[in-house]
Length: 95
Image 1 (cartoon, one colour):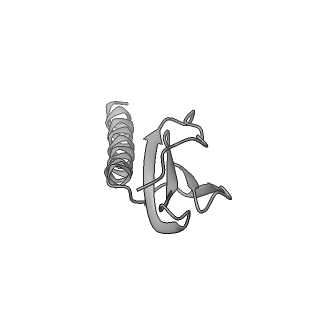
Image 2: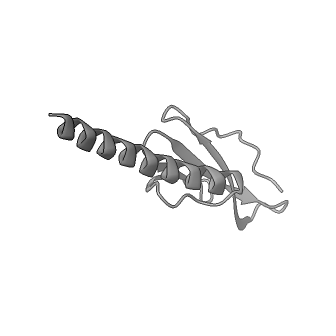
């Protein structure tokens, strides 16, 4: 019985550590305006390349940057939050 509890606790700790490393990696990448690694792309918006990614308990929206002439630069401005984070049409995307 005691061995079973230790095994379950160890598995739970490993799962929490894996999730924490996934979230930390994607959080740092989002703060550096890079697309996440561990969250798959779920939506693509037709505003010039904005993408939405959903991870385990979090969401990243990568807004495509628009230059002064209205063209796409290939860069992104990322926003990270909970699953309730929604796409904002008026998000400032100009550099």
